[in-house]
Amino acid sequence: MNALNSITVLVVAFVVVYLEAAWSLPRRVLGCQVDLLPALIVYTALFRDATTLALLAALGGLWFDSFSANPFGVSVLPLFAVGFAIQQLRGLILRDLRYAQFFLGLAASAAVPVFTYVLVRSLGAHPLVGWGSLWHWILMALAGGAATPLLVHLFAWLQRTFKYQRAVETSFRPDREIKRGRA
Image (cartoon, rainbow, N blue to C red; front, side, top):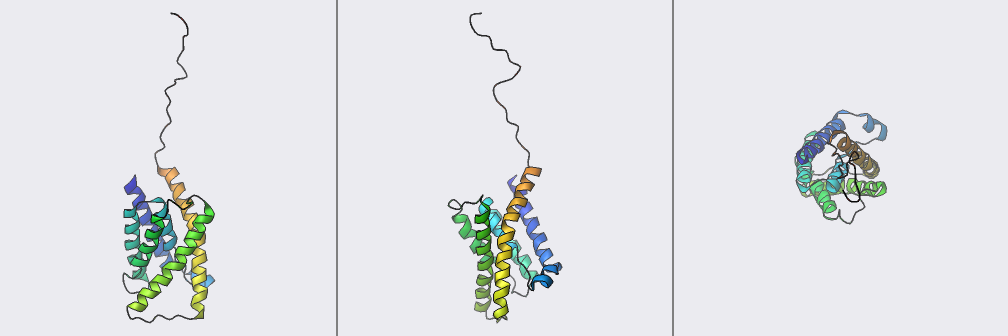
């Protein structure tokens, strides 16, 4: 079932990146494009293994960069760094609580663009950044925070729907007769 979980996370990442590039309604309404990959990284760091996290950071970052103006591969390291930090501390995180999921998604969605900007600047590029970028950054962080509990709920529903539920068996059979005393 572990391979199926990893494939499901990667398929959702591919669909999310494609919808971010193809669907322009959030861009027209909010004035910026919302990035949901950090929210998906938070889910993967909290509930999946390190292999799935590394695959999601690598493939999701490359898919995202192929649709954006970023240099190819620059989003991989920020996604992986945020996910790795959360995964190392997941034993201390109250991962089943919605507000903890919200704040982790908020922090990850705020940190990934900042780390990506630092990497792009260190590569010698000069992206356009102004006061409007602050508004975009705040909206992206809030949207990522709101999307994280929704993604956790979506994957929990997928697990309940498609995972084989084990039947609970006891050693007691209701049709068994118990005789007491001497035979």
